[in-house]
Every structure is written in C-alpha cells, then in structure tokens.
Length: 276
Ligand SMILES: O=P(O)(O)OC[C@H]1O[C@@H](O)[C@H](O)[C@@H]1O
Image (cartoon, rainbow, N blue to C red; front, side, top):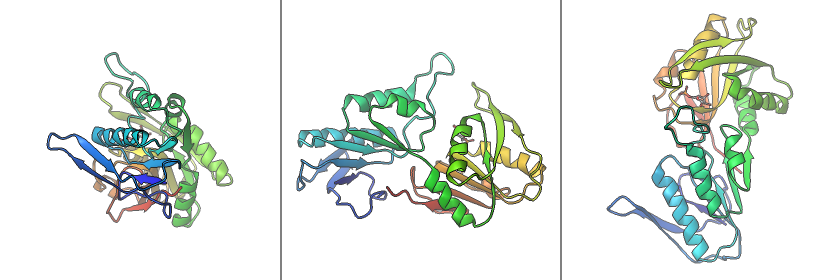
C-alpha cells in the first residue's frame, strides 16, 4: 500500500494508494486525516518530496497517524533527503543538520527509509534501515536521450566515487576528473580545473547529485569550453535550480534531472520521472 503525500509525485504507479486529506491550519501547522479503509496488516510505504520544514512535519504526522491505526511496517521513500549537504560541521556554531533529521526518523523505528542518490555516505550511515537507490538507471536513460557518445565529467572529488560506479554500470564510459574550491565562509566558488587536455570537439555530460544555484556547472562549463569541448549536457539527480535556467542557456545544450525535488516546465530541462 502506498501513501503518496505529494499527490503530484507517484514513483509507484499501479500500486494501491491510501486516500487521505491534508491541509494547513490557520496558524500554519500541517494536518492530515488518513482514510481507514485499508488492511493495516499490510506494509505501508509513504512517499514524500521534502523541500520545506512543513513537508517534513507532514511526513512525521502521517507516520504517527499510521502507527495509531496499528500499521506495523512503515517504509518511507524520501528521494531528496533534507539537509543531506549539511553532513559535517564546517565552522563552529553550525548544526549537523542531516543528523537532526536522521535522529528524528530513527526514533520512529521505521521498517525502511529509501533515499535516491544520497549526497554522501553520511546520510545512509546515520539512518537506520536505509536503502539508497543509485543514479545508474537515470544516467543510462539520459545517455539514451542524448543518443551519441559523450565523456562523463565529474565536477569535483566528492562526485568521483559515484561517477566511476556509473561508468562501470554503463560498460566503461570514459570519465574526466575535475576540481573546484568553495570558500567555507562565503560559499564562493573558484579555481575550476579539468584534468584532461584531450576534449577538442568531444561532447560532455556533467554528472552530479544536486544542482542548486548552478555555479558549479557554469564555472566548469567555462573551463570545458576553454578546452574546446563539444556540446555540454548536465545530469543532476536532484534539481533545485534556485537561479532558474537562464544561467545555463549560454553553455549547455540540455539539462536532465528527475522529479525528486519538484516539477519543472522549461524547454532546457528534460525530466526523467522516478519509478521504483
Ligand atoms: O553549484 P550549485 O549548483 O549551487 O551546487 C551544487 C553542487 O554543490 C554540491 O553540494 C553538489 O553535490 C554539487 O556539486
């Protein structure tokens, strides 16, 4: 049984859905009422796209309601895990945000928590009974859509381990390693480096987990262009795109993402819908 808290997001098409009503009280608090017309002895999988604290709150309320209805086995599918990037304390005074979310979920004794393309190994290490869905089939689908040979571009050291696994899954597509620096205090990016001088006319697919403002990818695109690379494509599992898409217009042919975070309606972007 599936409880899709975000009614625009259904990664389990065809599975029976539990009906519910959710709304926000006038004071701003989320609320939910789950219809009791289902067999509580079955496992229930809650799916939710979390991009605000209220979204997380609604998830917690739904878990509590199901427990009170005596559902014993509850799975949760949160494709984009909140604060996954706040996985270490960089400077004193910051919280270890991802652990705050993980601790709350762990306290609820869930049967399974599934996340899609975890930012780092920290999220699955912190969560009890965690399953991570890799980006392999997403990237394979992207390559099919591009329909020609590309090199895979790893934007930084953090993405390397994952991109080599993708390359292996795809039968050994060549990987180009790159690096960048980010100022801990200001978040400003600089010093983009591409460790391959043989990119003349070569089409490139940059692969990463998250695109937020896009600075990483625009900076990298400029370096790739200096090496006369061919067409540039970007594939990110979780699209936030907080600065919109105009920033990519000059350098990129197309951007691929999934619907793990939200929906998109822009001709530069092609969305591969998540299906489990
Ligand atoms: O440059 P923007 O898009 O803001 O940020 C995205 C980058 O920041 C990292 O955490 C992500 O893994 C990605 O490399």
